[in-house]
Image (cartoon, rainbow, N blue to C red; front, side):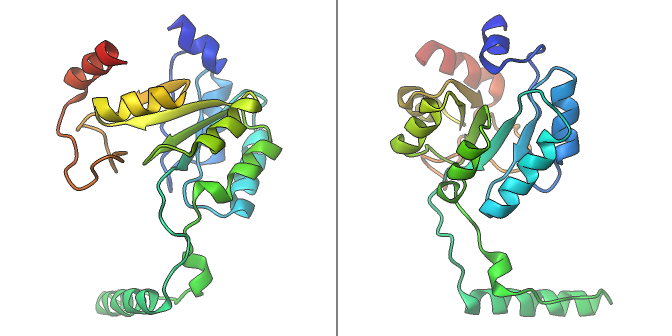
Length: 208
């Protein structure tokens, strides 16, 4: 525990989960100010939104906090015909239940990947970056480490943990089948690991 606290520069070995759509800069700052590691979810956000949320968090705390990015290779482009189909369907549902519905510009649906955000993190000197849904490129990890930024990966199997460790992650978050919300798998996303944390954790410790 002392190693983890020293590694992340925190007082207590408590890491707040970066829940996209739920976690706010205020929550991240509150955890950081209390001595834990606050984690700001930024997966899929534009560089501009990424910068704004980091600055808002910094305005609330002088303590170190982490930011979380998605490391998968999803394209950041969207197809207009797909968006129109989705909005047509949503509009029908909203009308059925007498709810207001407003169509959004296509550009608002763009999903940015981590490569679009890295420069912002470097400019803002974010001390800790965690990744979910994959293994970041070697050059990305090198950039972060060259700037004294700690990097954390997410694994749902022993194989994923081994890959993350070999890539040079400073720490790896292990997620069992009990993990709420999405699963951070990236080797086999069709057949997700069905191992519970109590069994998976010692397997990883024995292997990594």
